Amino acid sequence: MTDSLLRRTHHVLAPLQRRDIGAALALCATDPVAFVSPAMQLETARDSGIIPAGLWSVRRRAGLSREFAGVVWNGANFTAVLPSGDEDATDHIRAEVAQGAISRLNRPAALVGDADLTLDMWGRLEPWWGPAREIRPRQVSMAISDGPRHVRALEAPDLELAAVRRASMDDFATLLPACVHMFKGEVGYDPMLHGRTAYEERLRQLVRGGRSYLQYGVAEGRRQVVFKAEVGALGGAVAQLQGVWVHPSLRGRGLARAGLAAVIEAVRATTAPTVSLYVNDFNVAAIEAYEAVGFQRVGDFATVML
Image (cartoon, rainbow, N blue to C red; front, side):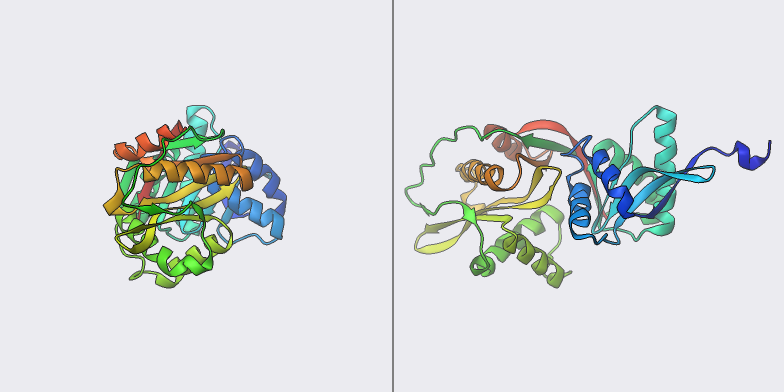
């Protein structure tokens, strides 16, 4: 037999086609919490008819046919959605997707997703895309598909609290500093110095889309944002919370638990039946707060910041 006949089936990256959207969404549905971000992009492409440049299909090439085998989202973040099988098959497709990413994709700001897949892909991509600025290999993926647990009423006589509600553009000027403070603490740099325009526009989109929640409080005559959270990704009937934040001077008083309970109720009533988030495994206080309102651990995430 010729060498070409002996060659194993291999996988290539190609721009996603409309005909791939159904199969790609079905693959994301095998773990809707882990794959909420690619599902969001796919649903937007399905509904608008416009496929963003960051969506790529993984095609299995065997003879003259090229069958759909997976999907990659490569926007600000990189997330791969690949089938799992026996060890050799899994290794084979991951190796060839990494090879395609190196040759065809732009270096993203981060790799995010299922810990096993994300860290394995990073091991293959690191010689070309590295070094990483920071690796968070153990992040707890959590979800809730019921109403939140009852949270004890806050006792804060020194703090006049308004109700948790959706933010509006009238709140933008006071919400932005809280978001920047959260971003600096979580990601490690000031978005107002690096990519201010894109960061502000992203927040405007979330606010206008009804996906930003906040709570005001008045202490010593000063009105300020004391709690906030955003639905950063929405797809596959899952709303992923991001940017959960409590004012530093008010932490440890139950604001996060009460705020999250209100956000869960609002999101489940208006946006998606399942609410998810992920958190660094060393952030014990945050994990305890999430579990207190009813979040359950459903998997492991990892983030590689570039």
